[in-house]
Length: 437
Image (cartoon, rainbow, N blue to C red; front, top):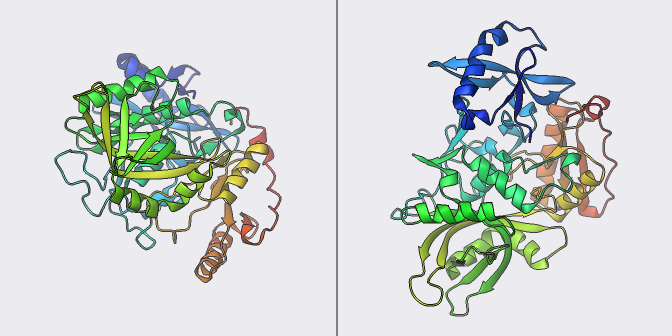
């Protein structure tokens, strides 16, 4: 990730200075503030993102003698999803289901605040609205979701870390440690409760990364006495507790020095099975190329006696699961996984819009090709069922895409009758010639 901004005149500025050297960062922005305002098209500050053959330019704004970058109006969705200035079009994902205020962007500080359905204080009820482990999409379509569930938070982490996005240059570099490092880094800019950012309560678990292990152990030490924490990682096993107390959950790497035992009660496990039956079936099949990641809301207590006195127990209070491909792209069916495999093989650039807490009635593309030279991207739909309700919904989607994008402006595959996958649309020549996209 190249977090570089080119200032008027060609000087390069590292966005890391905002934290590592804030005086220098402010000094350079102040010096270029007036120049940027006077500069004409193509001469203003810009990041390294290219859209339709041109760099995406930035504003330099002043607020109370403090300077910061801001995107030009209506351009945030066109930055790369790995760019700090990227903000997705909420109408193309499940974010469209949240009422105003559930997700609030703070442009000046590059932060987002969310209203969670769960309280993080250990002495408070787990949920403020409904029972934990509730599935997404229990309400009808439209802006109806008044709080963000654990699944919504998992999708927000994945989206802000750019893990729902793929381009050919990522091949060989999208690994669990790198992905969870990105997830932890982006969590610093997500406010989940008054005075609490997500990094203060997020515990990534992964094998072979001492830095991540340190972050997690520090979080447990500093905050587990007063707060519930979130544990995130790749599911590796779910076994019946031999003492009849529910299930024991393991994440990949949890035995690699984390000294943590995770468990879930029988009642909550049964609700997890009901809410995430498809994900657990995929996990039990152990199909090559597919994995299941989870975000678990837990209370953590140290074990004070016996041979495990240096360990801790994590009791799961709420959880969300998500099936991903080898590239860690979330998918909702094996058909979608086939499309990801094809797009990766064909060196395509695409986004997987995430569901968050939206009802299934909400129109949301399964994928969006971003290498077609189209301003809003090129939607892709995978139709996989044949029941009457699904077919009626399919007809509605077809009308919507034809009306919004044109008859030839979107792609679909009807996988329900074993039809072959149709040819993919060609890459735009403009996009193919982009040297840094």
